[in-house]
View 1 (tube, rainbow, N blue to C red):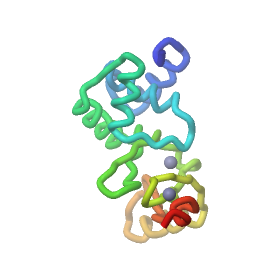
View 2 (view 1 turned 90 degrees about the vertical axis):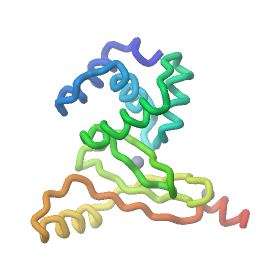
View 3 (view 1 turned 180 degrees about the horizontal axis):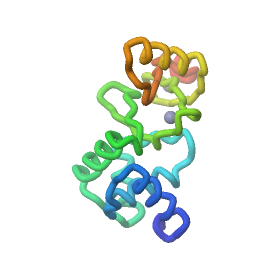
Length: 151
Ligand SMILES: [Zn+2]
Ligand SMILES: [Zn+2]
């Protein structure tokens, strides 16, 4: 069960507290899910909904949607437009761990990569217009080797 690890719970509470978010049970549950999933795991609202049900902590899909959206606005999660009409979420990495995504448009297999060049471009462009850079993400849409072979 997700919530039985007290250390984990404290990490999650800390993450919410740092950003001035109230620790509603729903937010803690959803954030725990992301903390417990492996790096490079990108979850859609449906995935989150399904995992909560599997963990016997069911939540309505609309609450999941609302909570994911809110936590993205607060900068706890990062909203990713990896496939058309499909939003995915991941923990918002610290800026020095920021990464980009290479996505297969057919099977949505996703590979993360880092790029200092992209980070510099983001900073330069933002600064040039007097903006403060918060996040810089590049999504490369492509066909993975397996999907190329099956075409
Ligand atoms: Zn990612
Ligand atoms: Zn593919």
